[in-house]
Each structure stands twice: as C-alpha cells, then as structure tokens.
Figure 1: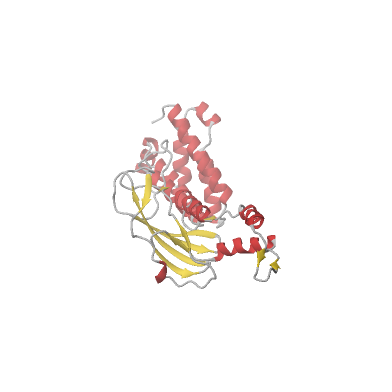
Figure 2: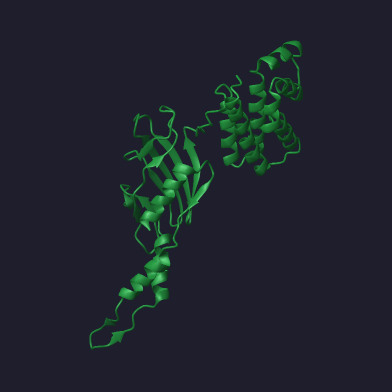
Length: 286
C-alpha cells in the first residue's frame, strides 16, 4: 500500500496540473487478501479447543482498512498528528519527481526537501504541504499543496506557479500566451484558455511585417483584417495543405462570444496551431 501511495504522488506531481488528481491503485488488494488468508491457520486455545480461522472476507476487510488510515510521509513525527482509525499511520516514502524548474528551464528530477513537509487532517481527509528541490541547480524548493480525499490525491496548489513548456516551433515572443492557455485549460478554465489562444494568434500576427504595415495605416484594424493581411503573404501551396490560423481564430472567436467552454475545440486548436508553425519551419517562412 505504501508503494501504491508513493506511485500516486509521483504521477500527480510529475504529470498532473493544478486541480487535477491521481487515484491510488488498490487493485492488488484482493490478491494480497487471499495470500494472507491462505497463510492463516486455525487458532488452538488452551484445553484443545480450536477456533476456526478468519474468512477471506475478514482478510479483505483487514486489507481495505489499511487504506482508510492516515498517510504520513516518512520522517514526519506521527505523534503530532491526530488519527483515530484502528490502524497505525501508513508510513510511505515520498518519491523523486520530474517537474519544470524555472532556473534550469527544463524538467529535471526533484527530490523531497528535508523536513519541508507538513500533514494536516485525519483518516481519509488530509492536506499535505510538500517541498521539492531541483537535483541540478539546488535552488529554492517548490511547494506543493496536495488534498487527499479517500484514495484521490488532488493538486490543490503550487508555488511558484507552474510554467508550461511550449513546443519549440512556436515563436518565443508570444509563446507565453500559448503556455498560459494550457495552464488555464488544465485548471478547469477552458473559456479563459480559448481566449488566450486567440490572444496568441493576434499577438503573433502583429509581429508579421505585412500586418505591421496594415496597423500603421489602420491602427484599429480588426483581428479578421489582420488575419487577411497575414494570409496574403503565405504561399498558395502552404495555404492549401496546412491548417489556417484565420480558421482557428474564427472558431475561437465564436466560442468566446457564446461562452462555449469547448474542450474539444481547445485541443483541436492547439494541434492546428502547432501544425501551422511546424509547416512554417518546413517552408522556411520567417
């Protein structure tokens, strides 16, 4: 069980985003319960009376009871924690994780920072405040707030805020809008994510010479007008083969105006934006 809890923490802190969750996999419990039951033997009391051994249901209930106790990272002083289950706290090892390091600008391994975690709560309702330090730069630890709800672990907070690594084909000058859109979407704010994708497209268009010339003449040029100016400078073969930013922009605008939190549109728009810029790279369009 301790290993299963550690795996769930690793998945949550390495792969999930704000407000997403990982669930502890306890599919092994029936197998363990059977093994425990098979090793049980009848108890012989004084006077030669034999008590029948526990049933498989008893063994299963015992194993499931281990999931209901408080979970404590190794090294935390359990005496200061209030727990009232019939079992001792589950002592587990915090895993090494991979997450984004602002200093290294990549996702190196992070180790639990010594004596930097706190557990509050009891039973199946807990809060974990965990510190993790980059193995490479040894910089300031990242703090994670994790909420336990029975077998679910939810990422309730992170400081500093997560930085999303954007695809390298996207222009660096505006890539932050794409990354912030991903963070908003993963945090359950898809409508805000759609808006930020549209901002990404608009701000990119404003870096294109043809659009700059348009804005000099028409300072209040609409997004559609900027998109048309951008389309004109693309090769005809490019426009017929690859996703159009103007089409993506129009669909994003329609969703924003109707307040449609369309997760499928978000994923489709992201894929088409990346395909478009990958094609620009192949065509050597600067």
